[in-house]
Length: 143
Image (cartoon, rainbow, N blue to C red; front, side, top):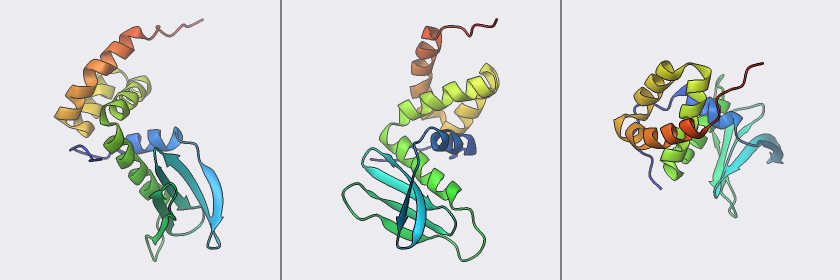
């Protein structure tokens, strides 16, 4: 698994992946973690605290303290999860995010954001797939 060369791990991409993941609560070492799985990976963050949890299924996950001071650990877990998605299925991840961007913004702005963040190579690989899916989707019906 290799992370593709991208220009930016965009906050909207991390938010999209975070929101589309199923999160569960579990207590480990007297710490309560919210965690999710992706493929053979487990990624989580301490509900109240400074620790993240990362590991492969079937093995004890590693728990890392990420800060001594005030620090949001959720964005760090989101970044790790987004990187795993991009490494495992770069085109599929890019295409799904492009659909979200176009829906949230508009066609032009959404694709500009995607092209900038994903980089030329990944964007050019993902665009034809996105375009075919976009054409196959029915137009939104307004009443």
